[in-house]
Image 1 (cartoon, rainbow over the protein chains, first blue to last red):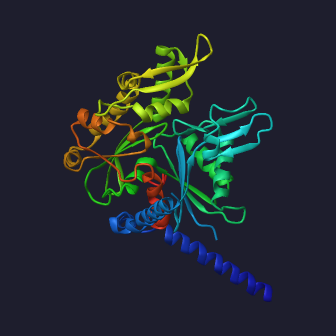
Image 2 (image 1 turned 90 degrees about the vertical axis):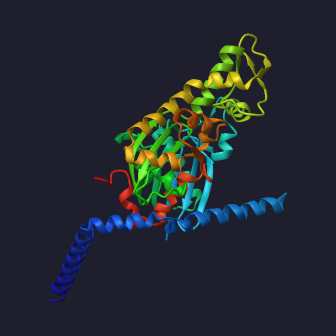
Image 3 (image 1 turned 90 degrees about the horizontal axis):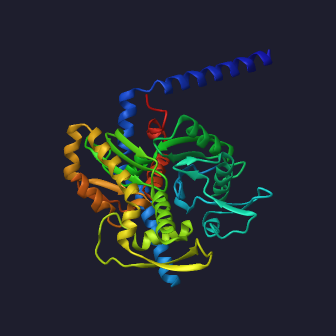
Length: 67
Length: 334
């Protein structure tokens, strides 16, 4: 009896995972395109670029200190 | 938990961007091996210093040529060592985005992704260099306007027109700054009868090389081995003769830019006249190249603020927004 319950739970879990993957795979193309464009906006890119710029400035200061 | 990585696996240099950290590695794509045992002796800057200066049993090689893997096994070892250096271990397997030339073949694509997976990546995806460069150069590629980017690397030169997050037209040639170095080596050998190494050729390019006449031109004294006597010899090189020596390579790059412009839709072409084209990549730093392209295309050419890091920065941005931007990977588009 216990084994049957465990098997049933596993089967339900597998079904949930499969359904979730299928639903995620069928994303609305308009929504997906919009998210891509939003992620490419200057505001979205700012943290990435600033992060590198800050690191470059820090290393520049360190170099200056060294010399 | 592994931090995901973006890798610009260039013919000349390899740069690694770590998610949330920024650029964590920037080194020449060179590996030094013991020819007899196959043991890796050095990578990156240390190996670069060995080029042309090794005893017979050591070989310092660039496993990528023309943007393509020429030796799969050595490339895999180099990627494995690079990943180890940035903290990737057997237990921390990150997602990796690798920038590759847009013109690579299906076989080459598979070689790069396989090399990354075997080297420790949980998942490896590829992104075209010009697209990554446009993202990293901070061009407004999210807007419906023509953005043109010219990426001149060590082994390839690529020009792309990008609008609304996608490549509209593209032109790539397997010619880059290493071909400029090779042209200088051949010229010095042919005209002056002396042999010079690839590092010396690169130094000549940096010191007096140019694609168009510039102000403050100087001559350069170069030392090499006389081909007749075998003895060390010094010759004086002029900027004019270097320009003449590299003319074929420069013409080929400029011609590919012109071809890309001619393939672009007319609605986007008019944007270039206002916005200009953006030059990225180490090859773009050659003196007079921007002016030469501008003269031949009659379109303004602007230098990116981060010419050497633009590609890895772009790929780094993709790794930061992996879910939203995974549609940009090579092979993901329909």
